[in-house]
Amino acid sequence: MLSVEGMMIVSKLETGQRVADFACMEDVETEPFNGLFRVQAMRDGNIYMTEKLRHKRGRPLFREDNSSLSLGRNGRYYFIFSMPEQLVDELPAQLTRQAKAIAKKLLTRINQK
Image (tube, rainbow, N blue to C red):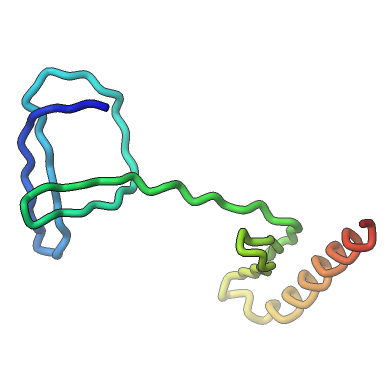
């Protein structure tokens, strides 16, 4: 834990975004960092910041060219398919082919257990 004295300027931009700049008035050396924070500004001028945890991404169980199947932390399976708009004519055939391929891989894994 590091405790320093300084001055904080809190303002609001024309876009509506709030900005807080802290200037340390002491001679200290710290490790630089950046991150996403939950910031809570109180009526009495106190400001509390807590760094948000990084999102853990799940690894896909199976992949195809434009799709993947993964199991979420909530116990639900997710099939993701993505294709550029320009290839809309190919979309039905590719979606069907890739979904069948992933379903076949899943059945093979289930039957091996």
